[in-house]
Length: 286
Ligand code: ATP
Ligand code: ZN
Image 1: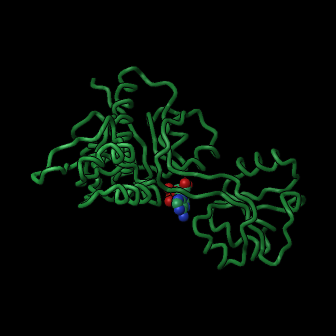
Image 2: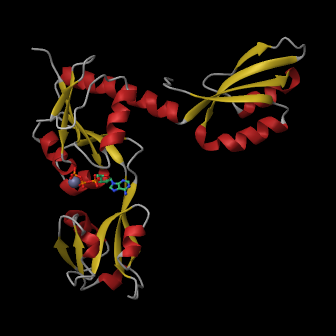
Image 3: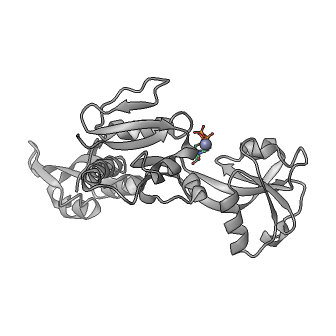
């Protein structure tokens, strides 16, 4: 029987869309119907399982799935026997402690003796222990932010992205407990065939991520500016330089990091670059 790598992803929710997009950009061909529990990848021996995100670490530990995409927050909370393979750069959020806005807060010690409502009891317990604060933990599975308002708890620990939910519930964020993003996890015990498939997938994910963080850049410059411009955008090995029809000028092609892109454009212009074109890269392999 052919080896198949089973990857668990969230059935519906905040991780689903970007997880599917990443797998598609990594060249996996599959169709995902609404109510499907699994999907067969057509061009690789990979099967996708659609599950609740909270269950994914357990399924990976039990080897029902070989790998999975989950939020780091869920992965840490569940404490299962999984290995972190790669941070995926989406679903970025933080797990924070919030208290009623009217309450005074002078530091973590202010939480002593309070009752904290959360869906992340393990993480909160670890946080309190690390800071040597004694507080109660009240585990609830959803709508955590309403707990102080209805008298269920004095504080909460929950996911915050913009803070608007906290605001509308009369709460203020006082401590960041954890920064989280989507991660690829895998079972620590994979057969060598499965490990090979996982490595292939990882290679593709890296190419997609690298491409997202870089742009292809083309520009025209006087020949005497080539050296200075090459120093600004050295590219992967070195830029490609082609003569222009106009004597004394060249076209220079390179790759530039998305993060310091605008700063570099300024430098290129000051060195005499003209007609700068910037093009997205689909895949990038070093
Ligand atoms: P499920 O039904 O699968 O249990 P859920 O309601 O537990 O879903 P979602 O709200 O879909 O979970 O969130 C899934 C994950 O997405 C969270 O565990 C977290 O890692 C991340 N996440 C949650 N809220 C945000 C947000 N506002 N911005 C970015 N990422 C978020
Ligand atoms: Zn969930």
